[in-house]
Length: 353
Image 1 (cartoon, rainbow, N blue to C red):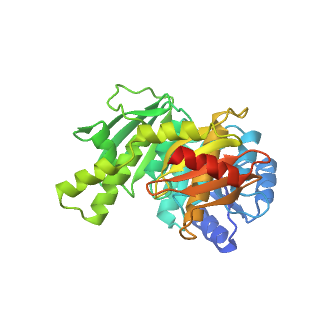
Image 2: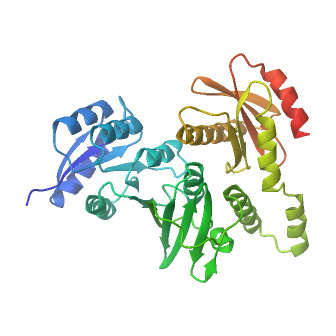
Image 3: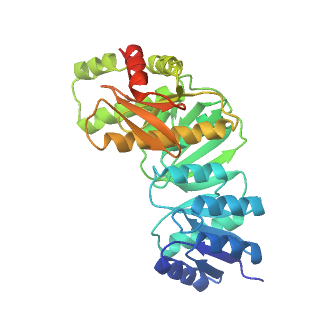
């Protein structure tokens, strides 16, 4: 029987050597490179059954490698190495068709089991990975933004759970005896575990009616309370009353997009969770909307890390975004051509007051 051939792509030569040796000891044929352009050329010139690709390769980066391999061979199975569950590139890799995510550095047992599973399932309808590599709130945001019909299976410490997506929202969830929204709030506590996302699976029923952004906001509130150790019910209820309802956040985003020279809006919570977004009609469709939302949320977070401020501008590629800090949330406004940040700030403040 012919040995399966694996392509290993990583910017660190020692990691390439380590992973190829691990694979060869298990009977695979492995070939590695530290350059993305070389990886694309190798894949096209030789016959590989699977590619393991790091996101930070020189030459063509990991996303470009993934895109090139999938364009050349739509059935290509590509596992993405990632070390950061909030990495926007990992999010984009999911959209581009990665079949699995593998947190690095990793040991031989995990590497081999991942490779065997990826070879077994190939580039099928399911995507697999660890919640440490791609956290649950990010998976929820992606599937709702992309309006996927999908079934997400979660496993941790002997527990199993299911979440179903349809029509741009999360519509059903079950964890043991917990069903619906309470199951979601419990699952948002899971920082580790395995996930399997299968596309095209319709929900068996609807047990969730709250919009996905509202679910994440409430889940964040509960996590905040738990981490702070709140014990007095009166204090908790007072905080609940002070929270800005998700419906108001959505309305606020719709009002902000009407400001002249504003072409995109993203509103995030303090921990970076996207609460609402609006974007003028884009010819590239919903994929570009989701990419904008992810990039904007990251840029807002990086701006806030610099310290307190009232407003400022940051760059996303060739575009400029205006960031305004609010007591309960943060606002990012994508500016159109020749926009005056000062004038937009003035208009935005009249909406936010």
